[in-house]
Length: 315
Image (cartoon, rainbow, N blue to C red; front, side, top):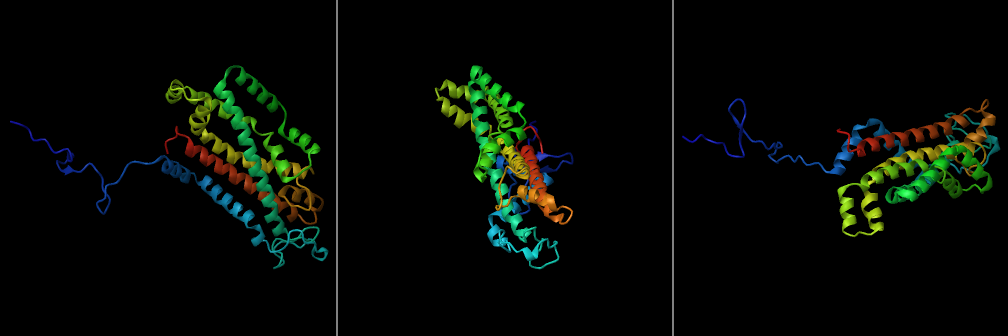
């Protein structure tokens, strides 16, 4: 006697009832179990609450500085000595008060944030491009080229970044572009080492060996095969380097080598406020809070991207 075999679309559960192994939604539509890489990364990122908060704050900061001319209630360079040191929340026209020259502090925070974030983003691009090229060349060619570039990188790491910044800033006219380049060209070493290690690992994979066997050119292998597969740590480094660049700009501006008045940046606002801290502490507290908020938000965003892009994590 031939035993009855259920159809492939059916399976028996312990109770003897037949069930359909393909799950369906309420309306009968089959539920797909396939999850694209983009969706998986987005889902992982959304589970990192601090990263989501940091991303929202970064977005608000970017909108604030882009539309600073629309949001600012006053001209940030307009002087009115009769309105000096107005405390915050005591005057409807000057919500966050005024500084030692009678300038609106809220407007200066908007425009100062524009300068600080432009320096941070430009310095990040300089850092990433420099570190990416050096790490890519060192990791791909290896041998003497790798040894020479890595010894140069180690030599640069021996000098404190603040020391290099101050030495270069003392001999170069401080502008937004020059400050960004100075910060970027003294911050690329960690990125270069990360990219080099990533390239050395990817270079041993089968698809790279196949590309070499098929006669692909070096430039194609480097920029079409290796670089796209090493982009994840670059994105994480980019967000973290923006935070570092904003902090470095504030530091050298605080020491008087950064953005010069009358242009406002959060760093030189702190410099001008140190003489009036006992009289008007809000002049230092408010730009200090903006720097802290910006650095923390970019760091949280970088942490979330790192977790979302790491294929070894199961989230």
